[in-house]
Length: 194
Image (cartoon, rainbow, N blue to C red; front, side, top):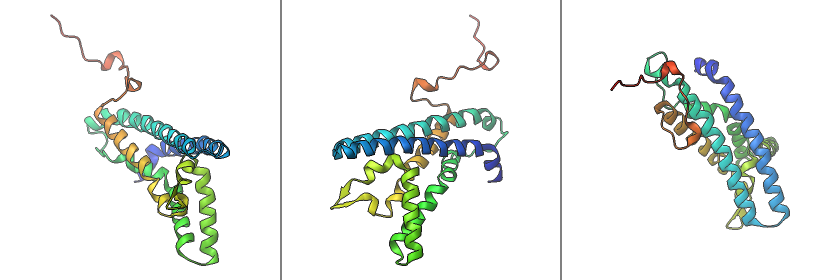
């Protein structure tokens, strides 16, 4: 665990900063759609913000896996195909803490837990703004943001995407031309003589 922090603390901070920037973007879109009083537009813009956020995470984590590929193949570092999910989980610790605060605020009826829950909701709004439009969607007349478990569920896509992306980077499996890496001349396969 210590080596994970030493080797990937920069990536964890970068994931968190990407989330914060995308959250502001998503929150702005949800606010604009809310002013237009158009729930469909609010949901569509929120889904677009979420997909953009997940794409940023995918590209970043795929590159981490790809960079570590040679070291894993030569046994210099241990093969941990779940490392991308673990990096994402650690980067999402603030979100997890706020989700716990929200859960306590909704389930435990006292002033301290109520204050924790209010703080958690405000912080989650700032850090998970890309989900604002979706969380405002009502189910049985109650917006999803009134269900405490939703704040845990919205952490799952980022962790899954990072886990899959890291694994695919380790295997050098590409789904898009964005990942067509040019190998240096020294690392390319020698051409066969005819």
